[in-house]
Image (cartoon, rainbow, N blue to C red):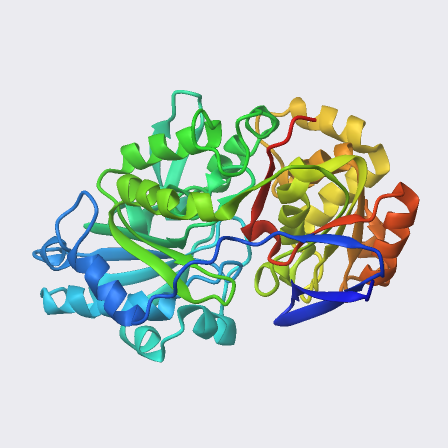
Length: 431
């Protein structure tokens, strides 16, 4: 049998991986979805035909102010397609541009500024016309206190959003390894929530809940907290997008935040969750390429997503550029503690806390695939110390790692997931 080569997302391009002769690859991709032939027209139609809401032009009438939330640089949301039409619609309805604010929903991530902000917004006109500002979760005065949820989560949300007369979120609908699906209500919390809000529902009592998993909204405690937070805020609207592997728009809708999000999830769910009839001892995946694989922090998502098809004791090989290095200082500290204490003792320290330490939840998520099998990482980023505290095995060649895994397990079957965490393989076999 001839060698075969597959390509997986890596940085801004693809990483070719030549599989050894005799390997039996299963390539796992999303179901192919038709590209929208006219993306700008699709956005206009979505705004004019909303889900459970009045058309955008009517919603804009008589408003005193408006705030539009956009995701940060870690999400490839096509902001260039919809920000200007919405802002122009608001201005046409009589709202002056100085009363319109676009806020980058950073959560506890770093701000996006300068050239990066220009890339994120994707339209110089927007930056020249309205205020585009970052959310800072640690600035107490920037948030409005809305009380607590029934589970006791303190709800403090960015004042610019809460106090706006018209509140709009925007996002990308994709699997999320804790909240079920990204986008919609998640752009609010954690997107523009205070750090105590974020640290509460990222604590171990939520994170270790068996229903806080990818592609699940039913009974998911994180999702339920987010819905309760939305109800506390009041009327919120959303524009929801779905992209294919080429990052082209295949779906867009607009409407009431919860209803429109659920409709978008319904569209993408069956195309993203891929039933697989067996588990594999060798799984090769990515961190979805740029921008998600800019940091090791985000790379953890790619480790968690294929867990369901990784055979116990199997090998998960992930490639991630990590062009920006590790992530936050807090995440670095959490990883160092995990390596020092070991996974079990580290998890025990988390379960004793009401507030999670900032970004340690990502380390907690990394423990889940580590409990299933062996995790190997190929990266061209990260310093020697950063590599040490990943807590996983570093490799210098994906191809060699695949050959070694096949030999070690005595099984030529290899699962390859080129798009990483944007695809969710689900085991549907009997054993």
